[in-house]
Image (cartoon, rainbow, N blue to C red; front, side, top):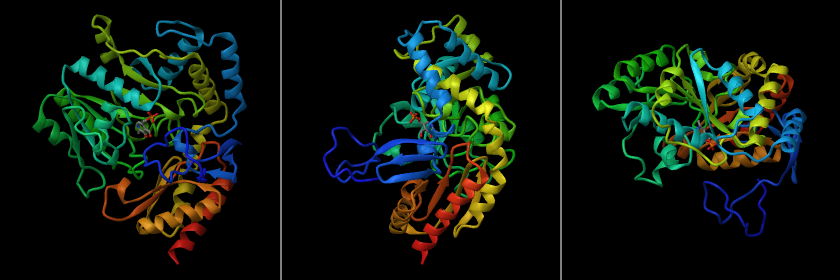
Length: 407
Ligand code: PLP
């Protein structure tokens, strides 16, 4: 957010480097983070991972204690926190999920879900949507439908994309594409499209996809990297739609952002296959103790502070507050909400500046992210510890900033 003024010794992500602006981050507490420019209210949970809020001492203490106890590990290691975390994650998944594969983040969670699906089904084709982001590694980039895939093509063969939800289509194209393509191994869905504008599927959508996957022998993978861990008012977002996946991929808020971890949760009907077949997958830092300790403590914080229930309770107020902004189509599921703005690329840039002056962090989406000729959106995703008053104060600032640039 503040230009450093000098050439950086490291790369900034997803942009050309000249003129790149960084954020001089110093710390934070609750729903705010501190920078050299001052204290920002974090209505974006940084990049959607800070669900437990900033400066969570219970998580920090757990990491320190784990560092003293056991800090170095090997993929085959068994230690108490690793077992406890796998059990805690499975306890929060639907009945029948029996195994966890640990990863370092969300991209490689999807990467390893791809492998599991390919090994299990023997099929290499996948279906995902244009309005989706599944990660930056090569397989996950191939699944991704948004602009971040295009630059690295050709990537993984067999990655099929379908239009959905935002293109005025009735229902979903997925059953028909499964039929026409045959031999699809997996369908990857963000239960709610997150970073690409918060698209909430209509009733019946998930059931339709689930039934089609069953008919055609494809696995359904829910990418819960952004939507999981309470963000959408349930522990996993798919719970809001009444259908269950075969694999669940996790990342981001699994540690509240306090450690680098991801996971693939696997249903028993898939997991059992690997009893007698090799699971050709692994990572040096598989279940690193510091990340595992962070995740265990984060799950405890979500429970102790009732954060998932708080996200559910604030869904209505957030949607109403978004409706008061000078925009269109306010929508929210839990504490993931958005409103569309028709400001154009220049207007969005001005809005970004107006928000920065007010020290508000949210996610702004322009035509490039939305894959449209024009349009934009503000995506709101505060830490799940936010109060209604804090939310209202933050949304009022967003409203002021929108009004300023709309004049
Ligand atoms: N999947 C979704 C839905 C995401 O939003 C992201 C990150 O934004 C990823 C996967 C990739 O996660 P990571 O950046 O931790 O690799």
